[in-house]
Length: 131
Image (tube, rainbow, N blue to C red; front, side, top):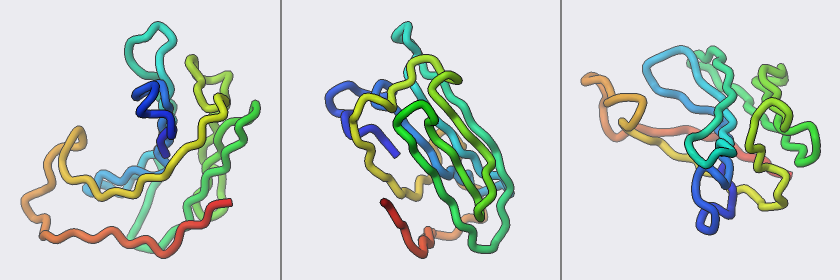
């Protein structure tokens, strides 16, 4: 999720929450929350790794814009909580909404895809529920 004010304040001031990042070559995925460094340079990140397999899983994030922050769940089990006191530059109480991104990125900071990758590649999402 990305702060909807990204065009006005830029990244990382808008904040970013990665509910699930799968780098494709591992049985581990990462969840992370990114906030700007108050000094104006760089970004702070708090993250957790969790294992995955080839079965379907239910991923959930609960966002409480007050003092609780974000709580992340995999198949109903909590595996990460991030609150405003844990990260300098907390930007998620500004009232700015966030929007969701679902993307299938190839390459980038995670490195190039392995030579055995067959294109096209699919990302299967059963449903997204927001309330």
